[in-house]
Amino acid sequence: MKFYSTNNKALRTDFKNAVFHSLPADKGLYMPEEIPKLDPLFIKNITQYSLQEIALEIAKLYVGDDIPAAALKDIVADAINFDAPIHFLDSEMGVLELFHGPSYAFKDFGARFMSRIMGYFSQEDDQLLDVLVATSGDTGGAVALGFLGVPGTRVTILYPKGKVSKVQEQQLTTNGQNIRAIEVDGTFDDCQALVKQAFNDPEVNQQLRLTSANSINISRLIPQTFYYFWAYAQLRIQGISEVVFTVPSGNYGNIGAGLLAYKMGLPVKNFVAATNANDTVPRFLTSGKYEPKPSVQTLANAMDVGDPSNWVRIQDLFDHDLPTLQNLIHTYTYNDEETLAGVQEMYDQYAYVACPHTAIAYLAAKAHRAEHPGTYASVLLSTAHPCKFPDAIPASLFKEVRLPAGADHLEHGEKQAVPMSASYDAFKNYLITNK
Image (cartoon, rainbow, N blue to C red; front, top):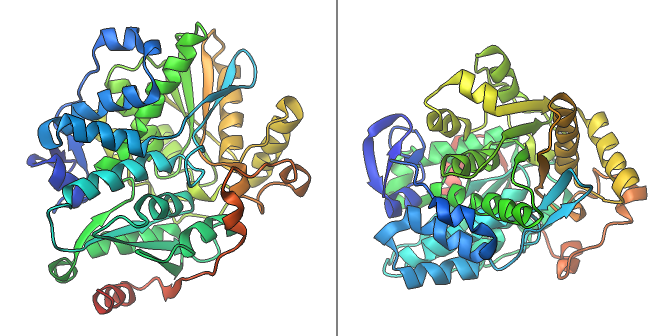
């Protein structure tokens, strides 16, 4: 399959090039030249398949002949070696738990798949692959653990100083080996801007072989469709065929993957984009004017994005048809006080401790159901384990959180991070000096 730039559909490339060169030369984002459709019979019989079997079927559609079938099967089996179960709160609402991977966040799906795809393509290359990634919290940890020890790769993670949780910072800064962390005195948007500038700097690209591990990379987006189809399979086992997905939304890669799955044939009634104070997209869907603004810090820090990169993909996916987007995507926005109330309510009502992002999704799912009653299932995506947010969950509830197996290391480990201003000159100098 070929992939085009959202800024120029005539600019086409193959899967390998799209993976290694995350951003097209015209600064767009790569999209598949056609959205492949899953066989309707496969969807009809989806309850017969495992998560890994579903993932492989989807991966084949995008990877095609670029990777032999046997090798692709091994990549999927190794990357997606954990579950994503639905925890039903009641007969109408379930939590799709996406935090059972090694970094305890949904981004393990994309990061692990991408790292193994890159590792496969890099086997015959001699030049070191430099992976740049900006994170508002969870992406960095997933990428660090996904690439840790992968031969021929080096990862540089940029994160905003004082704007990630302690646990998230531990996951970013204590790995060593081929993982480097830069603590930027700025916001996530500043970190993201630095990464994009590096990709578009001819001098840097002449000296380094750069690629991205953010959701701007198409190999991050594709595996996130896996768990939407897996969620649908689990619902069908329960006799449920109509679903609304509520997605905590920051950079819009997660809901973008859901919309891609919808285009591939996944039966979905609606999507709900649940946001915090960073409400650029909700305002756009209301007014029709896209007006990004500087991000503000909230308790749901992975959603602190003022100019979400993946929104251009979503618009491209629907040919910039605003009425269609308004009809398909409903939005709800919550402040920190409401978020904490949502965390408390989920515990009081269901004895379920959720991270702030999940609590926002819960509030949005509840509000959506009140405005759109029906027999559908409300499935809210839980994007991270609550253990990652000790400062954002009331102490009385956090004591109920059980650390996942193997999470003890998060309380130890020496921080290794390079402090840096949000200056591109400083970042460029770091990359070239430490190549």
